[in-house]
Image (cartoon, rainbow, N blue to C red; front, side, top):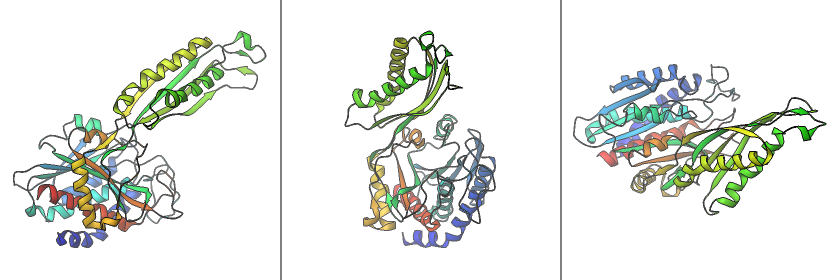
Length: 387
């Protein structure tokens, strides 16, 4: 296994250069044309079988050993965020209004680095490694349409891993968690329909703003009074727009929000529960409503055995004292769809340091050498499972 560390070390400049190239060309969900072309060319240069145009811009690279055995999937997300970059980096975004502020440039670079290393080591293991580069993780979600397009078949994927930078953990840690790791996330959009009129004549109106305020308060009681208090859950109203002037009672109010939970049953119940609350409040106040509930991603749940494999390999990379159990995250991640199809583990690389900007921030950056931890862990997991 020392050969793995040596190959990863020798690949350092290539991994850093790849990250910088990708960082310059950030593209938002389902717009990753340049990014997918770059990724595909890298995979072809390693000699992999490459498929492109899956779920619009998804890319798959298949490394075959020629020996019968299982197939491991290594997944990376490709999309950037609609944020104007303020890092001042020499390789900052060249696309105005878009930035790799969530580290997906690193996720791709780690997977491509692992592809380069494992290609050189393919005589040491059996089966296949399938590298999946997925569009639109930040929304509306590229994993599900990639699965529908057949990426988990031909050859059938037996195991899956992926990793993400994690600003909540110190630099150089590797976070591995069994069971639930990230929450299910959905979106709801609500229009409340009242009756507008003069602000001096409220008795002749149905104030949509007031109804909306009552709805917001009532929605919070789903968690505080109708959900088991030992099970984390969130209902957040993120936008609320109503009214045009100080002396006009609004006829409409428009709200949107999100729900989060780790519990599958709670996740499946959100739409009915929210509709029941909104219906009750609106009926009692004489308003109508239109509710659009959009299911997002299921909970991200790691298989216990796969998490143990990743943990064991991570110890070989950074030592036992630097392998940690990350806290549960209410963030959502559509790696969850892949993990519903086969045993897998989604882990994280700690990049947190004093004074550093968090993920999804216009000034987010990280120490680039930390990507080598992900490259090596990916490779060691592959050799552990397929060797």
